[in-house]
Length: 330
Image (cartoon, rainbow, N blue to C red):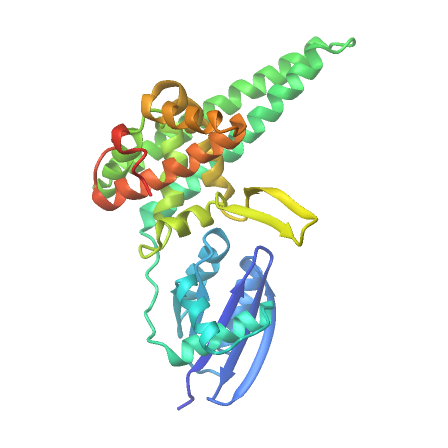
């Protein structure tokens, strides 16, 4: 009987770097595209000698979810989605001094071989269904914005054409109708499942998060591993501050990293604007930051990050938003 193949996968937006140990001794590396075709090639490569495979990859949200789902469904492959903090500490214990895609994959391979293996359980099917609907809605909203911009450009043009204006207006109405129908479908999915319904009610208890924003936020947050910390949520959303300093000549203001899930950032922006206008405690927090010489945009981003902290606490404690505790969110 063939020995189990142990593999680690370093996941990025476009590629998957893989390091594997076959038959307990032979080391191999490979690279695959991070798309459906690449996932199929990866699965064939992992099981090409007919034996089972044990695979570990880090939780990187958007980029890792699809490959984790593909591996989970593949016969003969067991997949673990490891906490990034645990992997980082493990790599440090290995005295890994350099950091490249292949060394990261090798560290994950050793993690698969030496650490307790906990098989990954994918998000519930209704969460994935809701996520697919929400992302389609987001794409249609982007296209509607583009059409509105085109309409404005045509209307102010010296050579305004009525037929073009009419065509754009018809398309905008069509997009709005599709957004409305898909939003109703998303709400129906939420109402059909008690856990989704409770989480939806928690989100909409925030003055500023209405149905559209809740539909966008809910599936993006529910697909995250349950053991993630709130700081990891913030980093996953790309709302963590990134300093830029070098010696005495470079000392730029800290900016958010934007290295995470853009869907979460986009879905939080409008609620932050509305909450500042209509939630007194959020407005007080915003005004305090502005009084400390933060720009309005910096203050709004801070509100987005603070709201994400609040949502994390609301989900963990199954409670509604309490404005009085907004400052206490750590």
